[in-house]
Length: 301
Image (tube, rainbow, N blue to C red; front, side, top):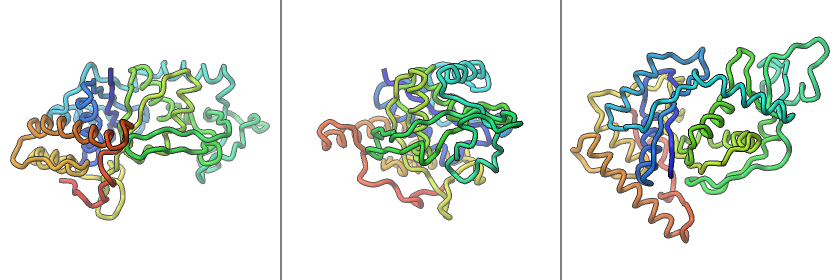
């Protein structure tokens, strides 16, 4: 059984970029006859607000993006993350780190605390111990992708200095617990996937299939995000926004239809495009479009 998910962070209202992510994952699940779950990723508690989670759910429901089962909220899952961290500690795959964010800045963590805390230093966070070697996987949109996590990212955070569990740990634990089989999300998370694969392997989880779709950007080339103050979706333009999101994903939707009728049409069209792409590749998974949409192919409304 196909099981997908949409996992927004409640740091603001849904905008066009998050609509693309929700729609892509919903379409792929429905076109495969599968389930679509919604998870509120509020593990970063200082940045998240409960009222934004409620607003996100109301917007999804209004657009017709209905989910299966109860909504999972990460702030209720801390014990599960703690248990996973203890398992990694017990396996010798997690270690305490005394470095401040400034000392660890600059991309790859240099491994200052890998062999033990410096004399007199106290642990501020916990990191995952990354072995050498490349980690690769087939992405259903981008094809083969691989990364040397040790040299490109280094040992990464599992538990932050402020007591919050990291996104990397939480997402891996929750995907496994919810039995997610297909992860469909934005290409901005492509580089995080090898780290999540390493964590999943260390915890004995099955690896899901991945699809990283192009991300919507503003006119200045920056990704549309709440952090960049992307405008919230206007309820008066729901049909226009859904049609624009479908166009961004390569589907030329009919004019004049309300959102739910557009979604029903899109499920069939999405499945047909993927089946056609797979047939051209000899039955292998492949992206349904010859190239990713350009950054200015759509505008937030």
